[in-house]
Length: 490
View 1 (tube, rainbow, N blue to C red):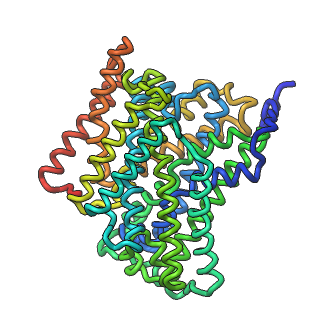
View 2 (cartoon, helix red, strand yellow):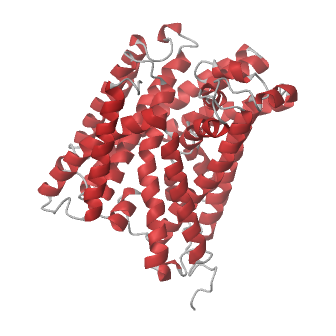
View 3 (cartoon, rainbow, N blue to C red):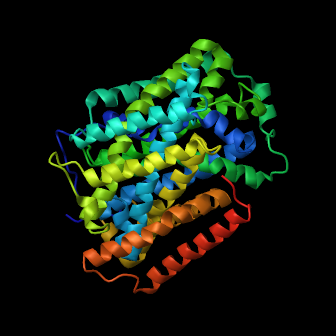
């Protein structure tokens, strides 16, 4: 029988798959990362006030929901695309944009490792002051030892460990729920402080819109990984649970972020939130319940990041490896060792991470700086995924029938909103973010050309490819001018 409008063509059961509850909790665990521990102070430090923070959450709530449903729809409509989310860019807009998407995803992942390193040692500094702000020499040495130890572990073929995943989950979620519970039920939320913070930005002269954009990058950062959540949803016991789990998990995560962010506004004045050391939630908890609160948060952050950095060592080496297998990267990126580990990408990725770690010692850059760039780099894959969905609604409207609920028009709107949101976030990255992103994307052109030559493929022949290269090179030249004239400093 043909599927009726609004129905899925068939229900596929997987007895070994995850039920709805386990599916939802797994997706929540994947999305909720280290960013939740820094929400309290990051937005305030960037100049936002309470009202603009609420506005930013409203915008990101809609934007990220559209992106989440975009990835869900694409996973159902094009289930055979196994090259990662960058395969959508290639299918929709050609080889160069497919490569650019893969390149951005890779650089974003390795920058996550850099930002995690800075936050990890900033948290450890609570117990061991020698680590300072997480960007001094002892911190860099400690981070270097950790990342190269993980290189050795992954090179031996170890890509995951149930014990590590359990530690990450417990150390991440338990402190968050303790913080929320303590602030609410111990009466530490002060409505008067919250009301004062609604219009109490710490940087003079910022318009309301500037304050909103200042908060937007942080809201995007805490949702990085939402594309992987859809992949986990594919392991469900029942197909009908996939959409439910995706939506339930998204709204649960949004609720967690809102509670942490807004409850903090009722504990400390905005000026004090802006001055908190990393991770700011530790300072909020210390103000609310005393020393034990700071100890709990810092210990939770430290354990969570030590485990999460193993996962990102795997992710940041696997993404270019998989792209090379799909022909998007030069062949050397597909090289493996006797254990089957992607040894070339593993070593190269961590050499680049090491270079960024060293730069930490010679600038004021910390965790927040690198996550802004990381979030900015991943916006390209997100942008082209949403654009591909829009394209499919016009070019292959019949592909939606029986694969997803609701009509093709709904997904057209979702895709368009996803594109608009991605562009808005790129703008919110600011001059410094866009400058550094142009520096990071430009070398990719040479890598792309080398890969095409190796695979015997034509390159830079179409109008779209030439326009993309032109835009990147123009942005690069403008960025050099801004840097050398002192208009951009990092």
